Amino acid sequence: MNIQLLKETLQSETDSFILFYSEDCIHCGMAKPLIQEHATKKMTPVYRIEETTNNGEIFDMFKVNFYPTLIHIKSGRVLKYVGVEAIAQMIKNSK
Image (tube, rainbow, N blue to C red; front, side):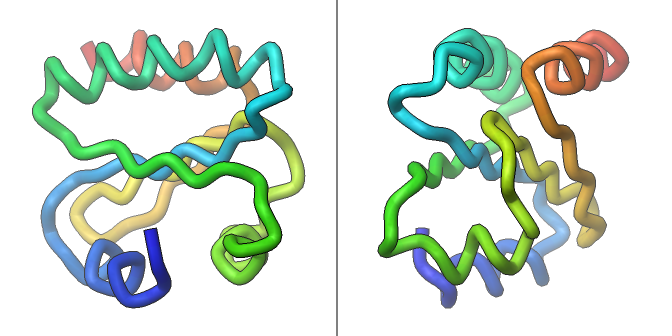
């Protein structure tokens, strides 16, 4: 995901998820299939942004400092869930 796509996503009325993760993170490995399954059921796109120096601007924009972090863009609003437990709870509450 680049900055332009991010701006378009934020302005869209379409729901989407942005998952911030690190490949070495055990909790991220647990969260990824939960998010993918939920997004598939809801037909919601998921953008994955790995911890790299190329994505620093996007990480800074959302103040991401813990993995996994899920940003849910819902009708133009930005909702932030930090940690696998918070992500699992959000999924459970939205069923």
